[in-house]
Amino acid sequence: MKKLTLLTLVIISAFVFVVSFSTQSQAQKNSSSSSSRTFQLPNSAVKIDENIYKLGKAKDKDGKEVEGYAIIHYKNKGAKNGSAKGVRNQCYGFLAEGAKWKSVEPWIVNPANIRGITDSFAFNNLTANIAKWEDAADGVLSNGSGVDILGDGSITSSFLEADTVSPDGANEIYFANVTDSSAIAVTIVWGVFGGPRTQRVLVEWDQVYDDVDYNWSETGEADKMDFENIATHELGHSVGLNDLYTSNCSQETMYGYASNGETSKRDLNAGDIKGISTLY
Image (cartoon, rainbow, N blue to C red; front, side):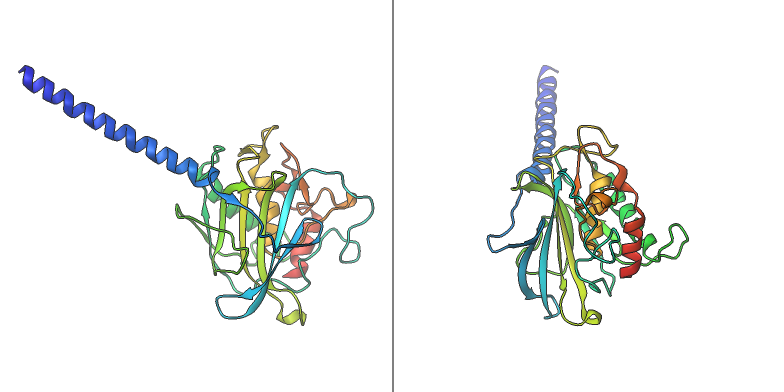
């Protein structure tokens, strides 16, 4: 009986060790999948405007020559005085006039992060934020007749990498350590931005959210970056809209700076709606 009891204890102890080791390994894998990853613009990136970098030219998956741009979203700075650059002083602007999506492609997110944003929240919130832009593309909210622009998404645990040299045909979203500690998030867009407007087109977008230098919230906590607030802005770049930096446009979702606890950019403003509906 004693031998049986001792054997049972050994088996139970071994089982507990295996389960504990497996749980720890999975936790380490989940945390390292974001915090140990680093995103950095290549040295060849050229700053061409406030917070916008040109990545150069490359071939897309179909062999078409395209250009890449990285738009960096920084923590709040003072707005410039005056009216917005762009179309007739309206509070909207484009990466390039006429450069938009002409085909619908899926997107993928690896939601692993070290700041407590759950997988389901990240995916569902990104889906809802995309729906805001698509709903507004006809100029009228909640009328059930928007435009399908960015397609459907899915979750993955696979390694994702934003494309800074050439597009790989995948639209990817993930958390990582952005080496520029002032950068909240980075969106990269590839497309044809020059030539006749009718031939301009977007072909790929990637996004990176910094979960090392910034804490994130699902509920608008005062000392954290609100994920919905930032993601709605970043997705504006994905559909082809540019940043705004002037004081009269500071209430637009596409205003180029953000602050902890801010939630007002979750909802599209008049300029955002006018911009997306004009482009599409």
